[in-house]
Length: 262
Image: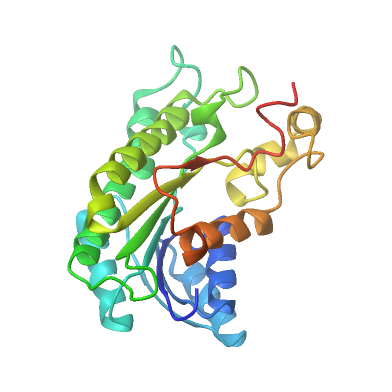
């Protein structure tokens, strides 16, 4: 990712690990998140390792945040070569669950935080990509990588029955594939990653539950349980970089055997 400009939503978990890894490989990283303290901590970590970054804060479900983030990234670095939509939430505490129990509040929050936010940041970023010259190395204007979930492609019957969350992540796949078809002529490629359960703050409940832990040991048999965030970051950087320049419309699931172990 030498000298590429990467815009990431989120400042912890997979987003933070990917930002640090990309910066260590000479990408210039701009990230946007709600939490100022986490953003500053991530920026300090990147800077202390010799990387280059900038950030802004705001609610990604609001159009102004997306427009400001893209404008600030362009002001800082001049272009946007890659967008990684990582930020998202689980609304389990708000009542997400099986559809007959799912609260309207949880449903609406899931769609707002996990789908609307991706739409807004992607809309603003792709508009900027369309206005920039293709890179001479690849002939491409940019790449978008969206965060989906294993729950969208191989849902679990038990332990992870958050139907609003799964639906929001399935919507991401629909957006990814229809964008891939439309923007290929413009030399913009769009892919999605749909991981199984990864060790991040979002999966704290699963990590703390011994019953779920035993389930994951079997379901994610390749890794013997929960996936490490470093491996997901490695895959993400590959999908955001020139090495994956022939891929578009793909949904790649690093799942530790989730789909096949049972």
